[in-house]
Structure formats: structure tokens, C-alpha cells
Image (cartoon, rainbow, N blue to C red):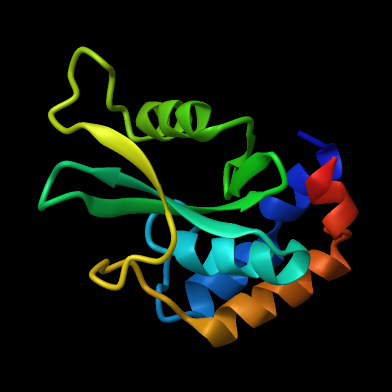
Length: 141
């Protein structure tokens, strides 16, 4: 992933918004993923995507943004849904042999999800990311 994106995604300003100025009060991996994904979509367009699990009738576990050919979340750029799920499983320490739940890829918003949504924080986050150099052209390359 481009170093500018990596630096922007992991900046103190991003975490300050997610932790201190959003209803999630958490980072991009533990509750702030929807806010982060929506901020990226505000910047470059795209589609809201999610990782679901067979727990509780395919509940949403994590959100990201599909922009062009790539999927983005707080961890960076992923080439497709399968690689995104594999990265998520690794980060959550869910090994294939130990998976107690099946993970899958879906598009769109899940109105039954308990993952916090905060439009104001997404706007603040988009503004900060743009100031840090995150532009549509950077996300599409």
C-alpha cells in the first residue's frame, strides 16, 4: 500500500476522531470500522462492504469500502474479498483450522448490525484524511 495512505490511516488525528469524537469511542478495528469506511466513500465514492459470519444469522463483523478494484479498511488495501477476509481472520486470530464461525463477504449496509454509525464523525474523518493527502486518485491506483 502507498506509504502516504498507510501514514494517514494510522495517524493520531484519525484515532483521535474515532476514540474521542465518535459514538463508537473505538479504533477502526474494534467498533469504528463503519465510520472509517464511510469516510473513505465520502472521499472517493465506492461501495460499503462487510464481512459477515454465520454467528447470529450472518451478523456483520466488520465494514470496509470497495473503491475501484480494491477494498479498504483501517488496515489498508486488500485486492479482493477473499484477501480481506483472510487479513481480518488473521488480525482477529481466527485460524482456518480453529474457525468456529464461517466468514463471508457482502455488500451494503446492515441495518441489524450493532456496529456504530456516526455520520458527523465520518465527515470529520474524511476531512482529516484529505488534509493528510488521501485523494480519490490515491485510492484508485
